[in-house]
Structures are given as structure tokens and as C-alpha cells.
Image (cartoon, rainbow, N blue to C red; front, top):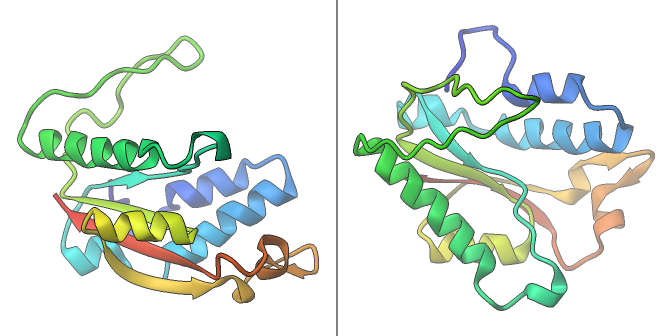
Length: 162
């Protein structure tokens, strides 16, 4: 849900609470990619459903698991937009309150960080809104591209209207 002007984003709050420098670097990278385009303004929406941290073990690849997870996320967003009550409380530390019960997404977004997720995004009809190379980010004196290797070269901010 879009915050007030000057209010910290969920990523910024998450970054402040990271215990490890590598985790903070990853979240700060996500903040930078996310900041390339204000999706709320660009699409004139006040609520976005975001896909985050999609990964599949090598032993489980080529089974459409990632595709089905992302497609399911899109479908949940569509159901919410249609007014269906598909919210499911998840208990964390004894609390299962849904704090955004009245929020209805109009857009699904993600930061696609590999060739595989980017190809999946294209297949599912996502629009590439911004792209950054891993040469642009450094952690502990080393570019992300040096850490990742030369297979995956960019991260893309993508979106899809519901």
C-alpha cells in the first residue's frame, strides 16, 4: 500500500532491521531497483501486490513450480480486485491480524533477478519497467556481477495490471 510522502518504504524499514551486512546489501539493491520507477505514480494505483524471493532448487527445476507460484500470485491479486475474500491470516509470534484488510491491489510487481525469472515474467505478460546491470552494485569491494558470474547480467523491475 502506498505510504504517505516522506514515509519510509517497507524495503527501507526492512533494511534498517537487517542483522547481516550481506542481507542489508541485498535489500538496499532492491531499494535501488525499485526506485528506478515509482510504480504507484506510473500506473496511478494505491496498492501493489509484490512477488518476492522466488527461487527453485536445481533438483526441482523444469517442473513449472516458479511459473505456478507466480501465476497463483496473479490469480490471488485478481480475486482480491474482484472483491473476493481470499486473504488468509498467517500467525507470526502469536499474532494473525491482517493489517491491510481493506487494501485491494491493482497491480502485481516483482524484481526479476535472473534470466529464468525474466523469461517467466515475459511469458506471464509482465511489462519490464526498468533494468539495471549487476555491474552497478558493489558489496564488500566486489561488484555483484563478479559474485554472480556472467550468466545473469541484469535485474528488472516488472509489473502487470490485474
